[in-house]
Image (cartoon, rainbow, N blue to C red; front, side):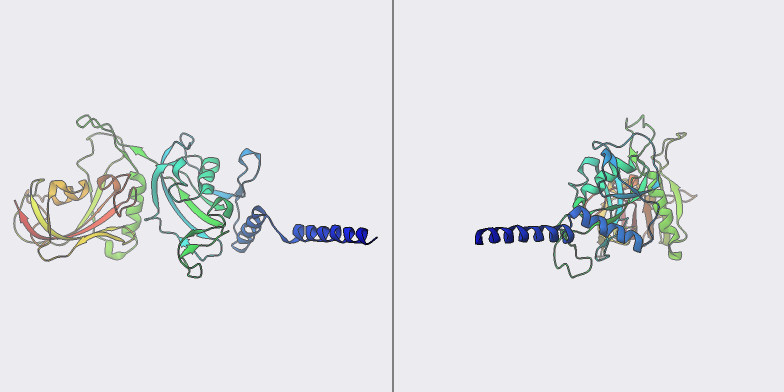
Length: 341
């Protein structure tokens, strides 16, 4: 009799525990779903669709902003990517679309530090270059229970804590081939349209940026119908003397090189400046230094102060360089310390 009662107690206990688990313990998929739905309601987000690729929901919600066109993207597609994101609780934001550039194979997005969910949403839902979308990614397809980053989770924007779903904006600018260059036998890939829009926005954001002159690059092939390369310059102090600057001219300058968000990635303000040959500069800067007036004299002279804004194709191109993200338009401010012909 005692054994029977003891057995019944054990069965009842397990039954009670099982009942509590069903009622109180959510799977991570259920947890993410509740958090995302609450976030969408609280922020009045409408017009979103569920990612249903493969016949089952991934937990991803997306809204196409621009549809894009062309060939369907694959994991092997080499793409430029602009992105921004934040956690649903707002404790972490990464929304600088000047800094947040990536140029790599779509299949490498997760390796590059972004999320599996973003890669999945691009493949399943965005699908085409030139497109953009907003996508909400559940934590299990983001940075999981471990989160991302280092440092204290109590410090805002210091790290992404575990089990945080993410709200992404993502855009894939069109890559445009330039016309075939019969002299150098090359065809360059660019993001000229995106760069030009970025520069126009930058110039319009502040009245202090008015007065720049737009110049077509000498690299453009006459009569071609492809995307044009332009740069912008503004002389803020005219300087003195008569010069004719060429690729072989050596100049010493003080300068500041920055992204269009104001981040300085290189500079020199030392007495006497730093020296280099004009021919060794990036294409857009070189061309601006070699501009001439109606008399054939260089616009850039001793003590000239000049500001130059260049698209990525006239700077560090799709790949970027140290301190410069992929396909970045840039601004350079120069003061001419000395000129050696």
